[in-house]
Length: 274
Image (cartoon, rainbow, N blue to C red; front, side, top):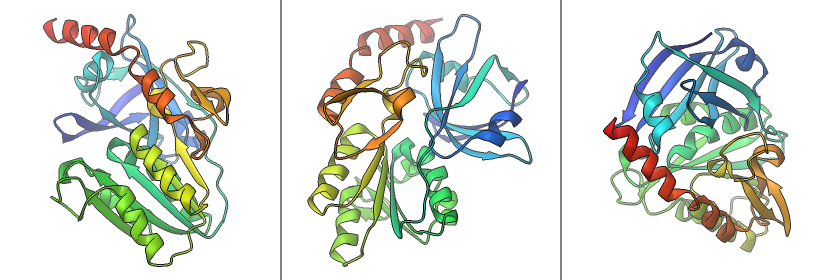
């Protein structure tokens, strides 16, 4: 069964959860996700696997409370069980030794960036991680990212921790230092990935982005995660979630993300009143 082994509050709106899932822990690869359902009448939501231990049989999720299902998930405690848990799903990150890899994680996007950083480092790359958040308390998983990296740079919008500014400021600093960057992997809000990609395109640096935030059903059936990549329609959950950052139509993606905002708010309001 999908028993919750551990739950830790990171901020009032973000928590981590270790879940018993030995089959998924053994098979998962960097970049993949699971789908869970909290209750019999609940919706199915995709969440990226932030960490796993095949020997101990658990996976770790980092969850931000943004809607009804994540709110209900936050109310579960260790010892309780999640009704459904399916995975691993999605195409794993292509991992190979390329030289110097910069992994950029923004906010909760640091969680899915973590297994990518681990795998890229294990493949023999020099691994530099840039972690960004609006403030210090939103820079998550710092200890784990430091363990997976040769160098870590931290930025906060308000200057409360690390370098004041955006992740692109830290990336520009590396470029200005003359570092030869062979690959950038960016995971975070669409607007962050857009500007990372615009920067790397100027310097012809290969860039991968993870568009996991737009997924809904996770199996390609609902069509909500349609994006345009290199002029062609793709489904993030089955064709991705990672794509060439220089080929993604970010404006279309951000518009699509807002499509169900009213319904999401209505559902959350009803959940809180109940």
